[in-house]
Image 1 (cartoon, rainbow, N blue to C red):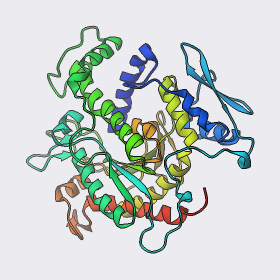
Image 2 (image 1 turned 90 degrees about the vertical axis):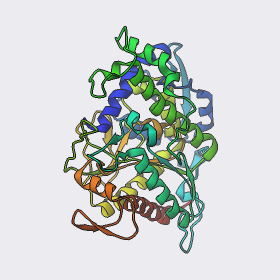
Image 3 (image 1 turned 180 degrees about the vertical axis):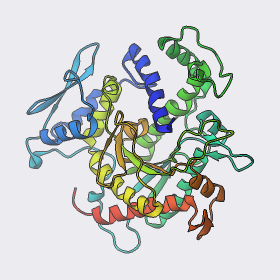
Length: 424
């Protein structure tokens, strides 16, 4: 099964059951709708309608959740109490109030001269997953015979460290959301065993097994251990990363760095396909079931009003272009459009509602290059990091880690060199 498809299935297994209690996503907090008062009259009707229908709610939205009128939008805050938040639109572009936000759009930054095109840009690097001792738990680990094990969390951290060096040389202020193989969250799987048990019972497993007895067991997702582990490394970890980004780092941009994968079967005897591809993600394309959750609906509206998408789209499209040129990878095509919407002009970019892209309160570009268990990417990963070029699979190439880092850095330079100083 494709890894991104697996993520979607796991989300709904958890979210649709847990919301029966509080109408919140997994480990979600009750939204504070009053903070949206700061966005009154900061957006026109046409801007709001475009973002709702063309970006965030492309799969449709129930009219009782968001009602777009001529002068206002009426947004349900809580289905149980039937309370609403009313957003007033600006009459036109000239009468709009300024948008409150802690991040700086590229157009608001002064133009630069010389070799520092990223001067003044605060960039947070978020290497996906954990790696290290957690890689097997995350199901981001495989090994071919006696070769070096491939662990996505280790790969992304290596890319992030190389990318940080380049970005600092270009003038950026760089932060790490994760700079080790240790979790950001203080929680561990055992902290979620009771919640995992409740989730399973609500999912129709009245007497859930405690442990996973066989990693290849098709019913392992119905065990307390598996569910408690996913609550730890996905939901608790990403929510803690979001707290770090939103309340301490305050970046202008987060780069989520990942490697993609096709289904590899037994991780001790994995399948290595020929296929290799690239795509990037920005936040959007919420499913109707997701919008039923009070916290996700709130987080979507707050993100919409911050206008993060105005910067995410051209920035991600630009990075997609430089990554495509550098890697020579074809664009990934999602097998269905159930959870994504193709956006931009590069052919490599999709909108999708992921936890990180939704919760980080600034523009987020989510990179998914290389199929790490493809024959080509696997050989390059085994070659490790090195300076210059080497012959790998019959071609002279940079290390896969430097190619990744350089292609992202080149996209940032291209975008900010053109977008800076255009006025806020």
